[in-house]
Length: 108
Length: 119
Image (cartoon, rainbow over all chains, first blue to last red; front, side, top):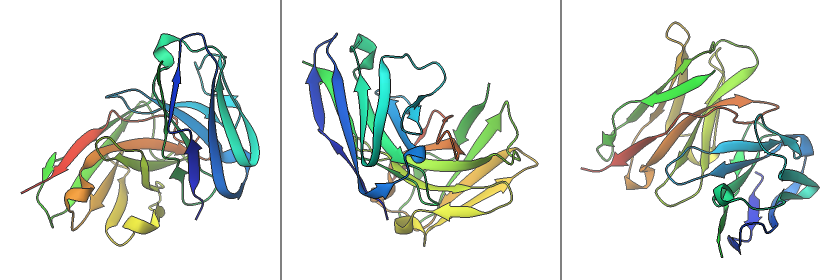
């Protein structure tokens, strides 16, 4: 089974800064099936990125995804106040889907 | 706009069966393009994918829960269901239902239902 490991566990940044979140897979995976979600307290997760680099409907272009093989990255170019949240990566390229453990982006 | 809503008992006794239903509105559960999934999140913890079900009844379950989970679809009511038997306190979590698209992953989610396992 594929295991996704996200780093860092917590990322402390200021508004306007750039955020770089990592997701590493335990084995090489297809980049067609790597997604990122944002979750705020008390809310359901929201799809940000699918297929490694495609933004979901309505997602601002300050969010971008990249990567291949075992290493994937979510980049937030300039953090807005509403971007402070928890972010999860997900692999969905097999019959068994899986999430990473999450990275919390909080205000420095 | 597609909407999903979880319903079912919010308090379940240990050793009993947790049962939740997800009602889909604004779209058909019989669409050949989608599976329908369940994800859970224990308080203060991360997301755990439980499994997914196709309108035909085909299912996929995460290995750690496979012996206790059953998912099903009722096309006449446009809803799908989750049953988790022999629950313990470790099954206390917010349970989400979501659409599962092979290209778009989980693109639509329900609001979530907190289910507490306690006597």
